[in-house]
Amino acid sequence: MDRVARSPSLPPKPLLPRRSKGRSVIYWICYCLLFRMSGRGKVKKPSTGKRSTKSAKAGLVMPVSRIHRYLKRGRYSPKTSVGASVYLAAVIEYLVAEVNELAGNAAKANKRKTITPRHIMLGVRNDAELNELCKHVHISYGGVLPCIHPSLIKKKAGDVPKAK
Image (cartoon, rainbow, N blue to C red):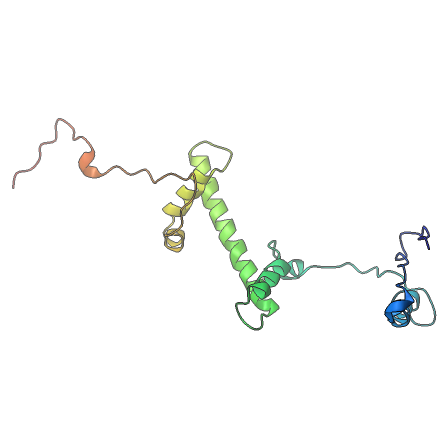
């Protein structure tokens, strides 16, 4: 049995399984109830309402559903609420925005238009709170903070050290 070309508004007619499995009658009934009949024998039309994601409902850019899936898959707790994933997505989004702003400022100070790992490292290390959060983090190709010890700096010829 070949599939018949149908208009895109109707769902494609699935191929029915063989009768030998014993589930074909139940499958056919479910198919008829879900796709063929809705209400008074009319063909079910696709819903015209717009779909919205959990991220859009929360007003976030980070994917709430993906974070929720990872929280469930990681088995951090027996149950995970959607509110926890929304909160975690909001925190991650805030941290990304903060690091992005600091790295952009560091790139602008170096007269660059592209943010590099060096600028990310400079932005994070120069901020006290982010430095405390990321104190054990190594940023690849970030380099080190420019720091010259005061004892290594040459003194001017006019300055004479004070005698004790």
